Length: 97
Picture (cartoon, rainbow, N blue to C red):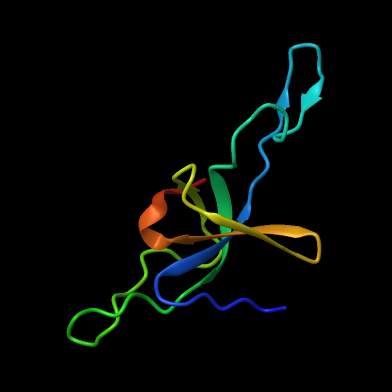
């Protein structure tokens, strides 16, 4: 299934952040933690329509890893895969390797 967000919305696949304790036990992201705050962009909308009718260019691109506000995304599942949809304005940083 192909997703095409509208306006300045972005579809993000959450990045799991497992922790490893000193004794080597792996704690998955789901234990006692809040929603993920990082993800990889898999689709972007065409941009917000400005007052003059033109579109504002998107500042992010497919494939970029981003940090976003904790409670901003809407969650949904397709074929047992979790995805998040959020507005570009809720993205606070692009993660560069």
